[in-house]
Length: 91
Picture (cartoon, rainbow, N blue to C red):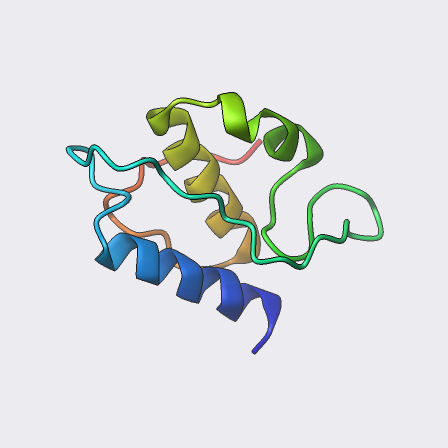
C-alpha cells in the first residue's frame, strides 16, 4: 500500500466512524500514520501529507480547523475528500 492509499484508508475509517461529521462531539484524530519523514523538498510529511506548520499546530487546533487540515492533506495526497469535510482550495 502506498502513502496515498494509506492516508485515504485512514480517512475512510474516520469518516465511517463519524469523526468528520459537523455535528460530532468527537475530537478529530490526528492524520499521523507513523511514517514521520519529510519529503525531499521539506514541504510535507511523506506519511500524513501535513506541512510542518500543520504538524506543529495540530494539538492547539479546534475541531473545524482540524477538519480543514484533513481536507487539505487529502487533496495534497490526491485522495478522495469525504463530503463531510469542508471544501478548501490549496494555495
